[in-house]
Length: 392
Image (cartoon, rainbow, N blue to C red; front, side, top):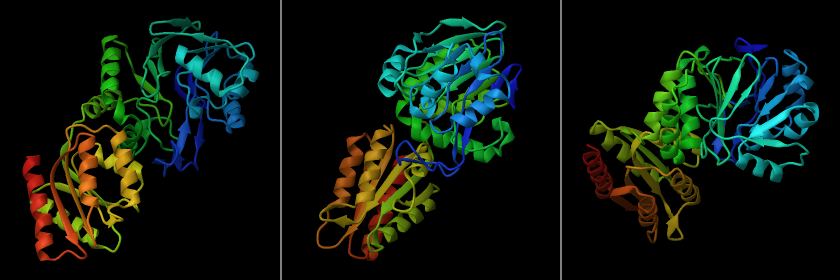
């Protein structure tokens, strides 16, 4: 039994083995959880269900507290299958329950599943009384789907935050402060970078809207990962920082190399940036998952992208990564494009054009034919120095 506070329990499941989330873009090396919360009141309420395939464990967790048939209210904060996948099963178990969600959730649920239940459409400010506790609904469209909402229990000061403030980490610990600080901080930042980064403007506005409601919040209970307790204000402040696209004096170098020449250039650029006191991190895109790169680039001022040329174009992995990065909608970033070539160039120009197309200001470019010579390595250094000067 995992009790959050009086009459509020965590009854979700742990997916120890999942390694790919959201297609293959989010590599979840530490697994994930599919959280669900039970409020045991005169009219028991279940907030969210879990992913399909975990129904038996889910029911077992609920039965540690009450018989699932006694659940009167089922709140569906979000439509995605990792949140709603077991709904067909739960609809059969909770035969007398009332189901709640936004209008958009109702629309999507009817497309995803074969259900014979009535979804009670709710909007911001609507409430249901459970007996000793009251639930208030807060629509948060595009945090991170149009159907999303959060649910607030005033009496227990719990905000059930859906995909906001989540982390992908498999753990038996219930609270974030029970986990090593560096690990939980990285998990939260990585989750934001890969799931919510493109939606920063809307998330900032919605957080501020919620803050204006003056809700007393002692617990933030997300749909993935542990519950925030002692560090509620800290994670809210971090979110507000991330939504503003705040950046550090940091450059992330991401490259793809065919015969090693582009990697030589990357190392020279890292060396030059370091001489100018710029924090620089270098990654081979063919050996690093996109989720890790997004985590590193979330607060980086400069994106340094390199590729060898093949058939007059950049290599495939770097092309795919730039497409992914464009979807993150980064703002106020500087760029540097570099790469090597054999008989004809093309990749460097293509990288520069791609970066520019989604708002990155390309400060400099550097190319090298075959293996870079001293003059071409100097060009790499000069490009890095120009970037460092612009970063100041």
